[in-house]
Amino acid sequence: MYNAKMRKIFTLLLLITLLNQPVFAWSWNNWNSDEKAITTVFKKQVKYANKNDLDKFIKTYDTKFVNGDGFNLDVYSSLIQDVWKTYDNIEYDIDIKDIKVENNKATVKLVEKSYAELVANKAYEGELQSEANTICYLEKINGVWKITSDKVVDETTSMLYGTAKGLDIKLTVPQVIEANKDYTVALEFTPPKETVAIASITSEIVEYPQKTSKEVFRALPEDNILERIFTSNSDNANEYIVASIGLTKTSICDLNLQLSLTGFGYTIKRVNVIANNKEEKNEQKQ
Image (cartoon, rainbow, N blue to C red; front, side, top):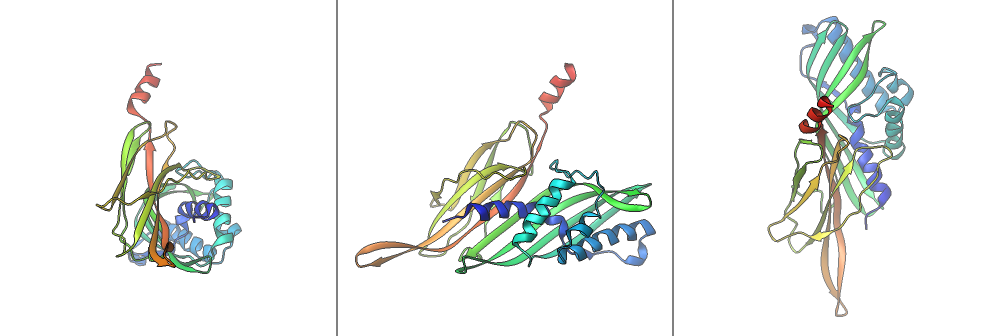
């Protein structure tokens, strides 16, 4: 029912929200020259991303770039290339909320959104929606502003097909969790009438190549809430919580009960994992 390649590509989409189209909330005339130059960096990114010009896009980053998940520029480039080979119709949007410049370094807060219309197996129309709050770090190198790192504060992405497109899906996860700690995840949605709903919740470490966890689907409980308890990894690696859903309708043909798939999809949220305070204290004692 669910294609493993689609899951892998879907997860990769989460890692390129930085490509989004800028929408600038402040007056251009009120910015100083550094703020204008920094804004231009993101404008160029959008221009090159929309043309799938990877070479020029990557030049907006410093060669020593490492993102908040620990990916260097080579790995990050591979992630972007993987997505562009599969999807070329994503519409991007960025709302710059704040720019702070101190000497030759800058911090930029962004709200990033993306949208795309999708088709699965030429049978199910779908859509991709993503939103993330991101902090980008830049440095002026030889008079040119370059992105040196970033941090995704929170992030939600959904890819829904068929009758799943109109669902109000709520996936509740902790935004930040200490390493090696238990945490609860809750998935809630109301399926369409006369529809049987199944769902699965998995936890996946943010890594490349991305590894997908085995899905175990369960019938959605009567209260329409499915919960799971996870233990955060002990390596301080960030995680994705992936909620997968399937919607089916029943019919009777020649006295035989038949199930037909009407909708399916995924909703993913990021969980940022931080070092355990006790572990840090023990390391300091040693």
